[in-house]
Image 1 (cartoon, rainbow, N blue to C red):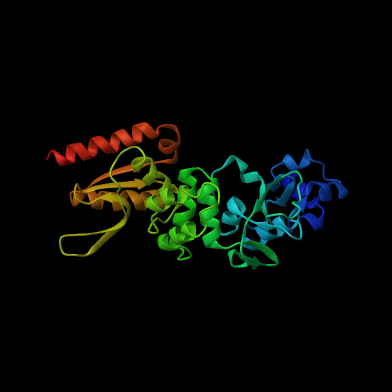
Image 2: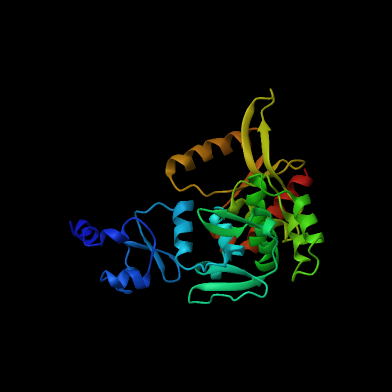
Length: 299
């Protein structure tokens, strides 16, 4: 009953679409109230009701509230519009680009950059100008951490929007842009077969930890050639499978357990890691995989 009363008290104008802190105040919703569970913080000073679906249209509507007329989305925010959840402390900011020499609009909640762009680098979605997928991958390679830059590149490559050769060629034709050399590192590490950001991050913690690069999305069959499973990562020669467990529901977890039991019955070693392993004990994760490879090579 209390929850129903709380939702009923929300002005109708704030229930369906993103709004700013200033707009909320005109309807009597204070900044303190916006900290409640009814609201989702999209960007700094931009909010949406918790029941509003997180769609591309809603994200673009949120951006329109803060983007100036001559600005365009770039970097992390463009990646976000394309559906990539980058882990970066600057994620609460709208990344806005402005052509070199133009007047940048600055305001709270925005990270503005003067950027040299060609018209071919931009596209328009729902009235919002933004860098296209190739330029977004290029900029993220220069501006984000190496791991998160590869997360962006993997996602766009998996979607068929960016291929490594095009990213390399773009960097070669824009040699004067800052941090251009980082692009080669990203291209070397990217893998368009990766199907999730955490799969990319797990692969990179292994590779950057000094281990051989595992194959992504390996199909495993039984002795009769019948499909058994498609696994996140595998060292095929050693018959070692490495997977990220992101299951949120027990049904999915039970399905994964049965699938992994079938793989072990075929002689594969299966190591499963969670978000906690990645974030709190990456060294232990690498050590466990390294030891498993040594044990399997010694057989």
